[in-house]
Amino acid sequence: MIPCLWLVSRLPIGFRVMEDAELLELATFVAAGREKCCLADVDREDVHDYCKHFRFRCKYFVKLTYDKIPDYAKSFQELLEIGKELEFCPYYAQEYCFKNKEIIVQSYYRRKIPALITVYDECHNLLIPRELELKIDSLNDIIVQLKNNCTLVNSSTIKSLVKLKNFAEDFSGVIDIKAFLDEESISELLIARKFLMENNIKSKLGRFLRLLASDVVYSEEGNLIGVRASRIFPGKKPYVMLSGTMLDEIKRAFSIDAEIVIPRKRKKGYILNWLTTSYKEFEENIKAYRKLLFLIRLKFKFKKIVVFGTNRVLKRFLDMADYYEEEFIRSEIPESWTGTLFLKARGRFAEGVDISADAIVMLGAPYLTPEVIQRLSRTYKRLGFENYWSLATDIPMLITTLQCIGRVTRNPTDEPLIILADSRYRRFKQLEKHLELEEIDKLDKIIKLKRNN
Image (spheres, helix red, strand yellow):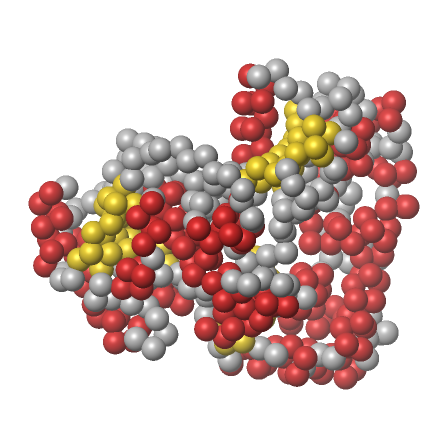
């Protein structure tokens, strides 16, 4: 049993943990999952199941012997380089490297190693439901692959997939997958996926099946989106929870016995109490949101403005954006950007990156959709949580909001204009632990903010 297991949401954070640990002369190893460690020519989507079913024929696994593994390795990255040269599996080689280490750093989602104490870094992430997207048009490719390569798949299952594709293309909202695919059909698809992997045929079928395992599946803007309630919760104590956004609900969910608060200066933020993106009132607020964005863009003459919102909201104002997140699917945001940058509240850049800007606008409180909330709350209730409703509604919304703001305020000297453009934020007094909030009831008063900035 190792002394300490340190769990992180992203491995780059793990390397920072290792750097700090080494300053204290603590032997540390940064471990990764199969997606980052696998050297085989396998689609990243299929790595876990390929390893589960077919590692007996993987040359890297078969050739793994402990005499090849260097004692000096500090991370999976070193094992990757050496594993390529000596042809051994870096993932399983990590187990050998754990011995004589005082701290093992890894992702929340990797299999946990027994430890005397476990640290959950950025523990608020544990309460954020996980989302998985699949382009609806990917179903075309899946259907063709099944027709051409998998005769074992019944024609009725193929027809059901076609019906699902056609329905999802024309519908927006939660989809009852069972209305299209029964257990027998899904079993056929699981067998087909195994067949495709065995024959080295790359496919989106694995991603589709993972999406079907979500607690909720809905269609939006050409995508199927699966949402899965968090199931990563602390085991036996002792454990340490670290968070810059420690809300009262988080403490209750994790049964925190004691808290150490590190004082920090609160940033100034403004709640606009005449706006909301709630489903019932959003349409009548669109013009007012346009006026707000126009004012901030032109009157303040800021060089850099970051706007966070849900995909549903941002899509209505894309003509006012100079950059949109989907432009950076395979790249980073250029440091030289200027103008207005639209980012998804639960997207790729909503957590774990630093974005310098003069202003940040939360374009509405980033709640999940009402149907998704209903289904997620039922899942949390089945899992035994008393606060199942807030776990599906307010907790992920508040955590997401603070994460978004944190992207632009990482540096203590940064003083961007922070605008929470949704009246619903008024209900949450605990936000005042993190922000010095002031309520604004008229657009004219924002002009006065300009004079003070």
